Image (cartoon, rainbow, N blue to C red; front, side):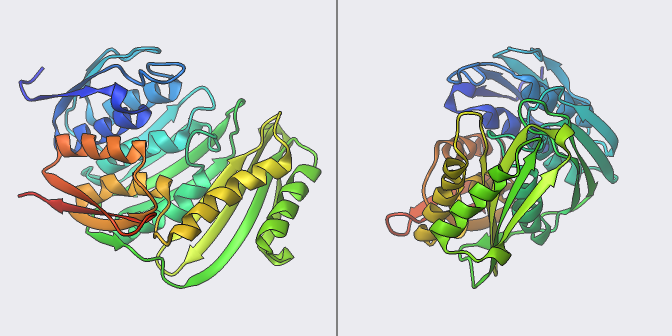
Length: 342
């Protein structure tokens, strides 16, 4: 290993600490060692989706790795040169395709040639942003920063069956500064209830609860029935389109959870964000930070500091010469500003 090895303690957060470290290692060429991977989770160490992210990152940049096996709580990663091209990665479970993709994207944007990546696994997983969130909320902002990325959902994959697939085309791009501190004018809103292999009443009850609690009319409510072979699965998506930002909130059906409670979970997330006056909610905040740091600057407002945001800030500042300032603007609005230190 090279002398300049960044040492990380994975206990400061979950899988995001590892994913951010992989992204940053690839783009900076700096090696890292991480211990106590996901130490505080109920199943610590590398799960299938984390291992897929490690192996995918290693393939994209020809890295030398050790400790890459299921359950491993320690890993070393020494990156090589980033390359573009055609890549296919299979998680083999309902582990999140979107989180594997987000690990690779910063490097692929800096590759010397275009890339096409297909990833199979879970596209709609309760512990990760669903594909709809990436395509409607995160990627439009990445494109405004200059990122040339197209995402296609080929097949839905729910927990526990998986079997979903996404395809992504990435053109080499240079990211530039983005500031998202205000939402701007409200443009539209909609609720989408997706079901696969379940009774149609599930979606109807979720949408009825949305109509009842938010006073939305029928034209803003849509039920989509997917191929039963993709199920069983259910997700409710609430989309709010504003002038400067689109937010997507999701909640997933579970065997022991009433449809109304699923709707309530998504509604409560949205209500918390709307009440705050902040531009981006907590998941989007997590995922804007790294691209802004790579761009050398940017800012956004979000309702509050979260554990994910705090650990992500810590990892980014280990790899990049950036300063990340957090300033409270009232009781439930926090302004995050990223700037280069030299």
